[in-house]
Amino acid sequence: MRKRKPLIDDDGEVRELTAEDFKLFRPIEEVLSPELVEMIRARPRISQRAPVKERTTIRLSHDVLQRFRAGGRGWQARIDTILREWLDSHSAE
Image 1 (cartoon, rainbow, N blue to C red):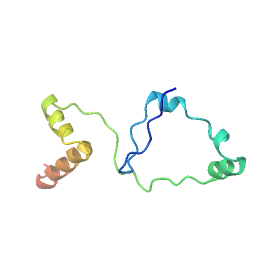
Image 2: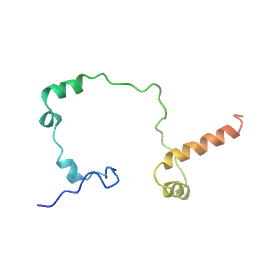
Image 3: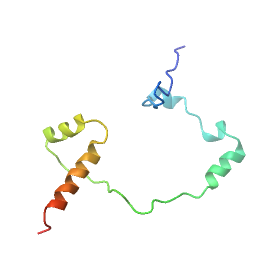
Image 4: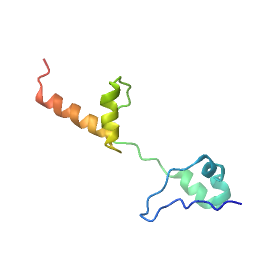
């Protein structure tokens, strides 16, 4: 039997889950008490105040996309920031 990798590294970050990790998942009813399951399911969901971002599909040049991705996490937010700055500096006409 193989030893499982810890889910959290030394910095407290959760690692990416693998297919093997997902196979170990169990239904909530098997893990928590019935009372706690009921409390979780009965809790009202908090809706987002207003949509912050909208999902869309755009086509970008390969080299442009690669340069943004090379900057690591947050590359989509960086594109959004740059587009917003461009809009602020150009007239709507």
